[in-house]
Length: 482
Image 1 (tube, helix red, strand yellow):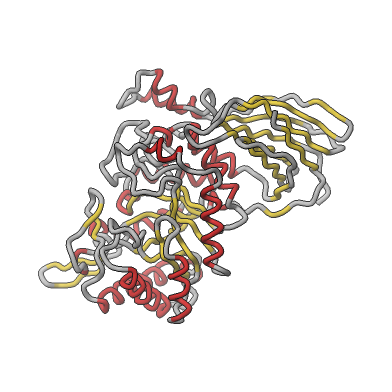
Image 2 (cartoon, rainbow, N blue to C red):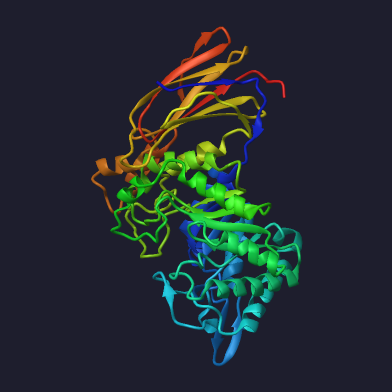
C-alpha cells in the first residue's frame, strides 16, 4: 500500500507553473471564430494561460503577403483582429512564424487540409522585408515594451519532411534571415528555435548559433510519447505501451543539457500525436498531463499542451463532441478531464515541499500557498498495457497545527468524465442544448469533505485511487510562518 509523508514545516522550493505559460491551438484563422474566442476567454479565466501558439500566421488564409495584378501587398488586418483580442483578454501570442505565403514560396508542397505551404522562400530579400515590416507594425501598434514580452519562434518542425522541404542547412539559413530581420527592428525582441519534433537538432542548432554568432534567446522543441506524425487509424495504444515510464522527463533533461544556459520552451506536446485517439478524452490523458507537467517543472520555462480546444482542423473539422481530439475542451466547450487537471494545477501553491515515499504507479506532491492552503496531489498512472491497479494510498502530514478544513477533488472514471456521460446518452453527434448542460455538469470538479485521523506529529488520511486517476486534497490551515 503506497504511503507518503511530508513535514509541512520543512523548507520549500519554488514551483514554476510551466502548465499555464503557453497553450496550443490549431492554425491562426481559427482565432477569428466566435466560438474559439469564447473558449479561449474561459480558458484564460479558469487555467490562467498567458500565451497561445498556433500555426499559419503567415499563410494565405491570413493574407499577410499576396500578389494581386502584379502588385505585392502586405496586409495585417486579420492578424490585428486576433492579437487585439488576445491582449484584450489578458493574453499574448507566442508567435510561430509559419508557413510560407504562396507568393513567396519556392514550391507547391503543402500540409493539412488548409494547404499550408512548407517550402523555403523563393526570394530571401522579400522574406526579410515581410518579417521586418510585420515586426515594425506590431511595435507601432502595441508598443515596444509590450512586443518585447512576446516570443518569436522560427517555423514549425523543420526536421519533418511534412513541414519543411528544405534541408537542415536551409532551415539554419531561414533562422539567420529571420533573426536578423527581427533584431534589426529591436535587439531585445525574443527569437528562438529550432521548433523541432522529437527533441531533435538541439545540439546542431546551438552549435550553429555559436559558430555564426546568431542570437538564440530560447530553445523550442516538441515531443510526444509516441513521437510519430500521428494519423487516424494508427495503433496508438500499442505504440504507447512500448514507452518507458519517465520517458518525457528523460528527453527533457537531454534537451536542457544540450541547450546549456539557454531557456527551454516546449511549445507542443500531448499524450499522443494521433489527432483522433479516444484516450485524449478520458481520465488517462488527465493523469498523463498532470504527472508530466510536474515532472519537468524544474527544467523548462513552458510546457505547452497541444491543444486548448477541439476547434481544430488539420485533417478535417470534426463536429463529434468526443472524437479523441487533442483539445482540453470539445468543439462545444465541454471541459475534458485534461481541462480539469489543468485547473487543479493552476490552483496549486508556488512552494513545493519534500515528500518521502515512492511507488511504481502512484506519485505524490505537496504544495503550499501564501494563504496557507496546502494541496496534496496524488496521481495513479501508467502507459497502456503496463501494470496498474487501484491503490489505497495513505498520506501522513507532520504539522502541530490542525487544519480548519479538508476537502478532495477527483478526476477518474466517475468524476469529471463527461465522455462517459455522453456515451450513456447514446453518443449524440449533435447534442441538444439540454444535453450540453448535462455534459457540462458531468465535467465539473466536485469538492467533497475528507476525514483525517490525528497522530502525535500531525494528521493522516487514506483514500482509494483507481488506475489513471487524480486526487487533489486541499487542507486549509491557520497561518504558517514564512
